[in-house]
Image 1 (tube, rainbow, N blue to C red):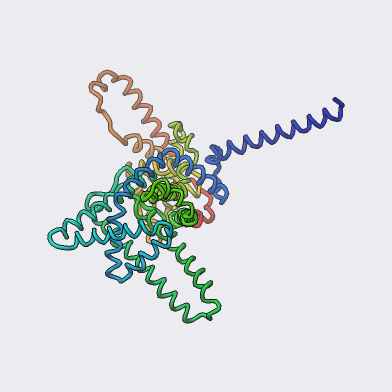
Image 2 (tube, rainbow, N blue to C red):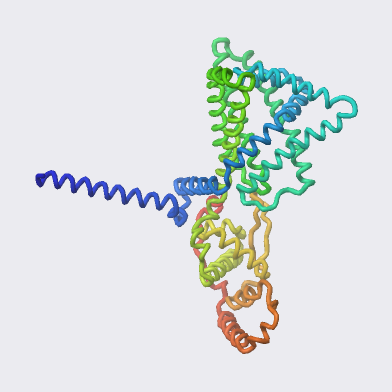
Length: 466
């Protein structure tokens, strides 16, 4: 091997090593390092959202939940169609609904026609005589049971421990079951009316393509809004519209693509007909339902992740934070609140404090809770805050809030003196500890938090809204 060949091999090995090291650093940054990056640029937020979405998707067993919801949807599909068709009859759109469903699944018209006959029979049985009340209750119970399970899965994605009360389930779910079908039916009627108006206004040569494009765009937008509304309504927590809309656009686009693939693939159904016969539609329906639920739950994960990425900044370090550093962060939060109050400016919310000063929201929220429990701060409602979050203001004269005050009040939060015979067994030790604590409080009384000044945070309101 010549010297020149050795140099080329060494150069290639060096290039490969540098590439491998860069790849390793990039992987480490994407997986863990991004949570230590306090920047709030689009790229950093996007990586955090993707990172948290993947972690949440794997930790919540969404595939198992999608399978369970597929089974429950299959049980509720006939009552749901019956409810939609019953409302459609009142508006005169039943034939339009049947036509649209047949257009979406053109290869299974015979099976769908049979299903429509079954739905008509279902409605006729429960709309006459003594069965009318029982039929409505059974229909609503089937749908409410499905929606309740959907809420449970969404709450698990959001980490919400408590679901809706029984009364709220009855009222909210019933409203959803009645309002959403009406909206869908009215949307179909608006499409028909708009189609006729456009045909009358536009030249004949441009009627068909323009109407088709406008109709498709409105249909996709309605799908986006439907998913966005689902992400806002189902979880038993407050979801921001911007995050729900972003997730709705993603999930709605995925749903539209799935619909296109499903409809386009109907030409291959003849092969399933040869195997399953009259049941050929069933396996395709199950596959389609499970994929739809996977898309829906994935959108819920993205919605949760995009709204809560700041909650996971420095998550590993926060889990093992030292008591001294936790105490220092709490003092800093109190000093920020006092500084804002002394400048006679609008108080900050916990999220604004976290965003403006690059603090983990978990520590800020914990500090705010402790300060409020110690009667050092109180909540303030802001009329200009459309997110519904409270702000924080000092509960005492700021000149009287010292490090000693914080040490004394925060040190007494929580349960005390509940261990039997503890004070009797450790009398001398407790006395020494009390002397040290009193000395610390005395020294801290000479340090007023109002004496510290902080630089004004630029564009904190805009940063908070992002």
